Length: 90
Image 1: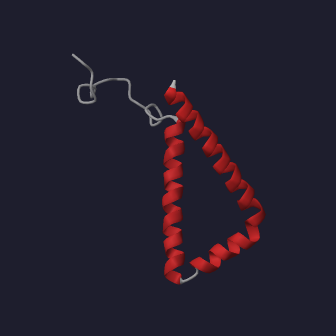
Image 2: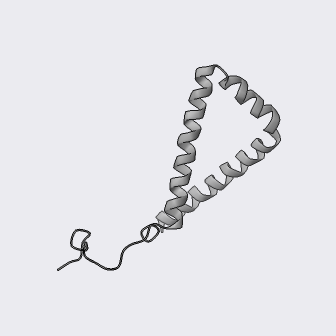
Image 3: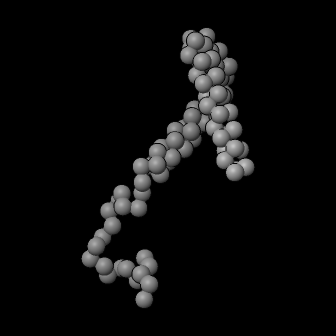
């Protein structure tokens, strides 16, 4: 008989919390949790009328970091995409 979760009820080997999860799954969960919290925070700022002021304040204070970081991310994404296209052709 094939072991499934239903037929494995009487098994002495109980699974721990981290047996079925990997580091990347937890990292992905953390990223999506952060993204959802960020969306809720942006919506909260929008409802209070502080969204535009906050975005302008972030841009003014962190402009020297945002521009090089966005250039690096765009360059990395373009190089990665060219690699994907090149790999599919072969």
